[in-house]
Image (cartoon, rainbow, N blue to C red; front, side, top):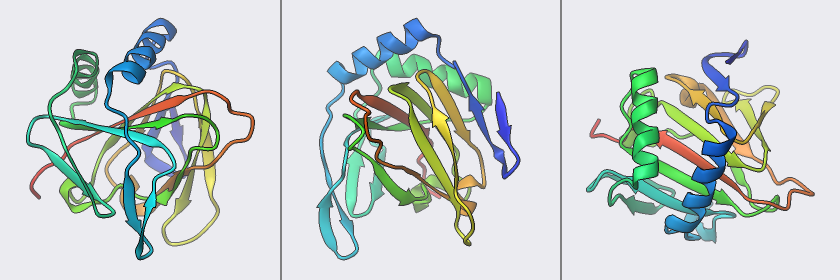
Amino acid sequence: MQRFEQEPELSYHQGYLNPNSADTLLDNLEKQLEWRQDSIHLYGRWVDIPRLQAFIADPGISYTYSGLKLTGKGFPASLESLRRRLEEEFAHPFNAVLANLYRDGQDSMGWHSDDEPELGEHPVIASISLGYSRSFKFRPKKGGASWGIELEHGSLLWMGAGVQSRWQHSLPKRARCNGPRVNLTFRHIGNF
């Protein structure tokens, strides 16, 4: 496990999933999830997000961001077991996953924080990476230098309480990345 001097509530767990488990999960999710390219409201207009996504949550749980509302229908078995493992190891409940499929290096995610009201005052995000490695960047909300980490196949990035209120993050485009990456962001959505 790697901790970061800049942010004590952030930790990186290389090899959280063993290579065979990570390969199997990636293959299953690419085939089983209902991937879609949604549009979001950004700077006064609707734009297609530059990646595919799927929302998985307990029935009746919904999540809204940038004018888009997503509703859960339940967890597939492969994600239910991973959710239970995370909850047990980190003593934190999760009832939803926003999954992102980056088809290649041209798919990306701009600067943002996961700080929507339904995530509570101090959201916790457990982010599992599968597939091709990509750079994940952070920058302080109050200004300052950005920094990053390479998220590898089967790794876990733990963004604990306070990270979303102090930092923004992004996944920039990467030239010569010709394969897919799936990112699973486990979160707890409630009535706060």
